[in-house]
Image (cartoon, rainbow, N blue to C red):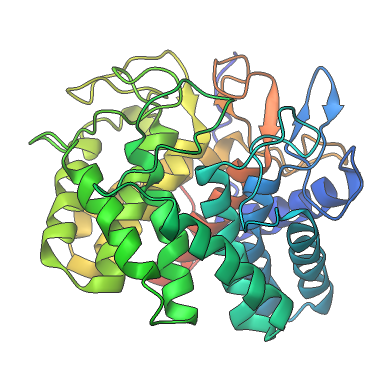
Length: 369
């Protein structure tokens, strides 16, 4: 509550510390199963493993293994993959919630996120177990989709019911499966959902039906999800209409960035602030989308917007110490905000690494405010 530290530790320091935190989260998971602990709570300590986010942490761990030339990070990615394969349902789907959550039922969104990791594992390691698991998950998603492109049959019991535009992030999993194994209709299914989601987009780029629990004031986290899925649809298909849809949303988001890179954790229909905290996950997800748009369009304003957001989040990361706070990224800033209250979230660290990696790639140097 005293405010952000003035010092920005820079992208490289935060990439390294967040990677160390994810390794610690795998080792310290309360379920001790090879998955990554959902969070470190200031109240409860380390949580059990979270299948959904362990799935999409896998490609980040692989990227860091290559970047660092670190075989131990490859081994960690393999442990995550092996665990995901072991917990897959017979029909190809995956459960919602933490590994010990009840009810243990198949969920579209979680399956799509794990699919991202299975596709990365199949491409990286050539293991037929990962490829088979990828096909079964992708086929389940393709075949459970409604005719209009929306997924309605297997929604999560852990969020408010209703259609979800942000399941474009499920489509991203199908796009990755399409890249690994074209010819099975995975990419076409993903694009159908993106087209459905765009029917929920308003002229200013705001998406209806796009939140876990408040569709009038969606989290920047789910805004980041829907925007990334639309961009990934463009990257797969080359369709200009998808790029322009992403531009509409991104242009409005630039106006939501306040002094020092602060962005409210919820945004209303006019992209005005609807919360008194920052959702740090959403900030770095949106920053990553800005960086992708800069690479696609050459528009410097997208690079600048992304850098403001990553600089803000970097300043919230504590580098000192050896507990669950060191190298972690809070759900909210301040930490008592509504989103991930009192918690350091594994997906926040993952998206923070990803955004900073792309920023360094685009700028060719470390980044300091």
